[in-house]
Amino acid sequence: MKFLNVWALAAALMLPMISCDDDNNNSTDEPEVNPADNLTLLVLNRGNYQSNNASLNQIDLATGDNMDIYQTANGNGLGDAAQDIWADESYYYVTVTNSNRIVKLDHTGKLLAEANPTDSVGGPVNPRSMVLNGGKLYVTYFYNHAVGVLDAETMQEEKRIPVGRYPEGITMANNKLYVANSGGNDYPNYGNTVSVIDLGTETVSDTIEVVINPTIVKADSEGDVYVISMGDYGDTKNILQRINAETQEVDTLGNGTLITIANDKIYSIYAQYGSTSADMHFEVYNALTEQKESDNFIADGTTFTSPNSLNIDPTTGVIAICDYVYGETNTLYLFSSDGNQLVEPIDTKGYDSYKVLFLE
Image (cartoon, one colour):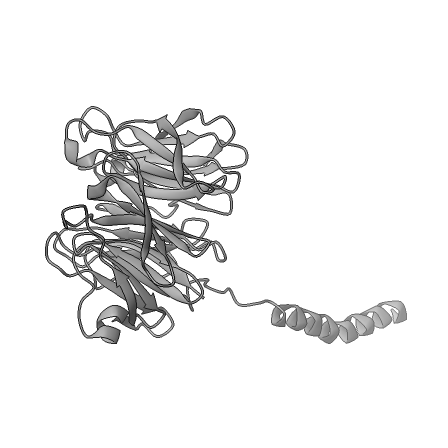
């Protein structure tokens, strides 16, 4: 009996110690952090067709503020059909296609300088996409069938490099520029080439054939270049292809309408014009193994009307997708890296939301 009492006393003395240990364990549990809580985003909105209402909206998720920084800083609008944006630690560069502008802004949105390139008879060249490298901006001139080389400090044009018909996207890899020649204004005679520009000589060194109507080009860390071709909006569908960095050979990965690359992962959305949400694909490829890793990076069942942009924050893994509905301000969705919505959908307060930057 005394033996039992000793053990009972010992057990009683241990209970508070065990209880304290449990409390200590619980107190060290970190609350789950939402990676979107304190993000600040910059959304480039192309605007409605020929409505001159492009905008550059900065969205602070911590405060809920959403401000057109260009309008606020300059007292007027960005223009008609903003197309591309490039950011460095000091400036933003934006192309505004139908307004024939390439603008240089500080990070408050204030206009510092701009270029308005024209063709040989003074007509607009309609700048589209760009790359910033070595103090130079390389910009595709849609109506001039060329790439303009601008001094990024002064915004003065230094040179033009002839490429294929109606160039759209541009990217840099292997000390070269890859330019998608869409031929887009020559329907039904679309282009089907990517021009390769040697940065050492700033001349075209190669021309690579791809599926018709190429518009988007992106490069991975190994120098492979991924090409989205829009096809003919009929029998030839949106296609995703890869140009091998070493051989320049082209292989087809599958269908694709939008791509972005982060941390050696290629994220692809296939949303053929006129398709329903059930027909859309959200796939992930590994750039290093060159294998598909996922058939659906949206895990929570979110549906879209017409995905119009795809961007990923390489630091947090947050996925940003803007959904387009003509005539309405667009909706921005933010997903975790495992494909679940992080916050309620956000009104971008802009039309045709096309690019999202993640700000520090």
